[in-house]
Image (cartoon, rainbow, N blue to C red; front, side):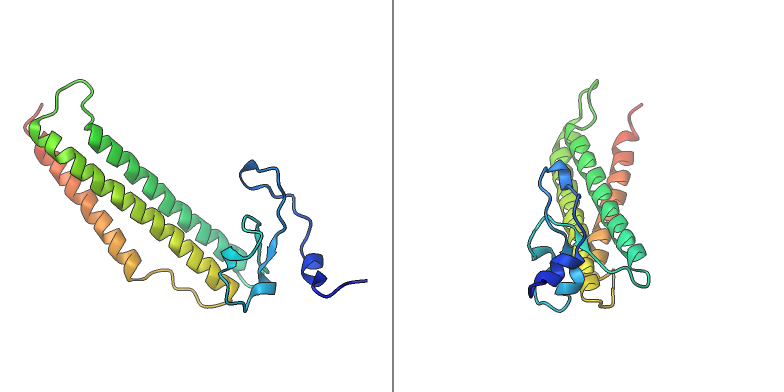
Length: 173
């Protein structure tokens, strides 16, 4: 006999998913059962359980696009952190850096590191916000003033550093 509250468990298939190779098997979270709740979909227990969405219309495609967008932000963040480390060590493994380069290396590295963390936070925030909107079946708007301003600052920083590198290396052979 089915008890009240067992409908959710009966609608969820057996879980063999193991995030990060952890040998525990958390129950999947059926998003449709929590669609109108006030709680963030990522805060519903079990916290590391996979989220199960109904695949209606183009939901699967939209979820995959959202994940790819997050991975693009993650890749940009990783590249910028590598550039930050490279600027700090100044790529001077064989020759001695000039005093101007030594003075500029740490501030530029810190700027790129901060922008890297900002890109990572922005990407994760957009991902969580979009998944929460998917769970409520709401319209999705991917861009906003935060995204545009952070990416504009990143673009200007990359352009300025490229010009700076060209100007400081133009006198060296």
